[in-house]
Image (cartoon, rainbow, N blue to C red; front, side):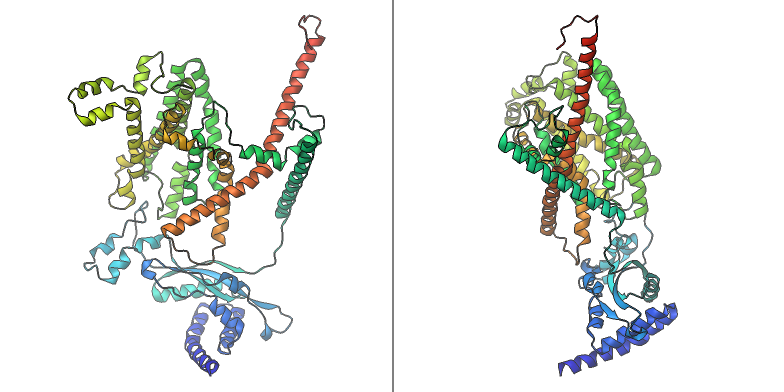
Length: 604
């Protein structure tokens, strides 16, 4: 009884839909094979064939919650690709019909916007709607998001339908709603074959696994017999030493070791870990490894730093002057290019115009000159830490008293005068070290101005003038670098208190060793995670935090594996090679001295 009712209902629904589909197929002139397979799909749907219902079920349907931002219906990607039926109407020797998953985007018509408007700025067109209870008003408050997102539907169609066929049909349907339609991609299930690049990568991975396994076994065997010097400069057995460089046991011990040298800046371990976090929130890149653009910048900065460090060692004033000139050049360039190009004060998520965002990223964000000033601030604080090593701010003295007062203004005289008034607030403040107090207040002000300085602009409440945008673009990186440098400086001089205790936590030591590998690999893991999502994810605070923590842990675990298998072994090999070269040069020098008849030194 239920089966017959379901069949009648399905037949009634298909009979109403069939003329509409046929008219569209006729108008857009899809390929004959696609039209034939689609007719077979409708026919088998009426006959309640499993494959037909699977294809219908695998297609996305309009979701609920459209007014709350639910604009995606993925359908079932895996179910669609599993569909496999013989082409009985073409004969038994003409292969099979597969399910093909296509992602179709529909975008409503929108008024024009300024090039660098943010996603939170609403269209002025919808502000004239008087009643807030009107549906158009509610839609108008969120219409700007459709400049970079779209109604996305995953549909399952026969594999004989080309992407062009699906595009023609989607555009025809979009015309009835006055929507633009685009087919982003179409996929079918294909045999899994490895190309030569993938085969080479697999062979390299197997080789690394063999080296790690063999090196670990040899290392453990030697440890059971006797204690050996694993990385001798001139090994007696080179092959054994090379294999020992891949020892999982030794490299793991070194990687997880939490001890540090006495002159080590322990607080940096915590700062390095904190610096990794923003990358997990805003992966705005085009390819899996494009985030490594900064490595090239860092290399350029290392070379440029010689123009500061060499004069700094010989003449501190001259070195600092060169450093200040580089900072001024960087700051001036950032401000000028922002003013000339009429750029926004900085990159923020999201800029609705994708082409404008790419131009801003290429000319400003990726440009090394814009990041030179923070690097030079780091050179300055490194020099100060080196000069004041082992001293606190209260005990540090310099020969140049004027420069000390420039770095740490002394307000003790002013506070003493105010203390005579007996005001309790002044008495309370006077108990603190005035230099530290001034430094922390200034640091907090600089860092908060960097974070919240463009809040109204990003939120769409106000628009920055060209002058304000240029000023922020010129100074915000410098201010942030100065704030971070202050934290590092006070911690290194014994004035960090609880902050220094936290940042110097020994658990951060092995994690900081993994930070660089995490930086290189984490985005690939994020893309892997995103590529395996099969359904919508609710973007609540708790869900986002759980996802963040999961990806963070997964990234560090993966980085730990990569560090043990690749980074640590090849660093060991590098040390072996460098030590062997220097040892060989030293032996050659000793040999020349020994053979020199004019040399009267005692040469061993």
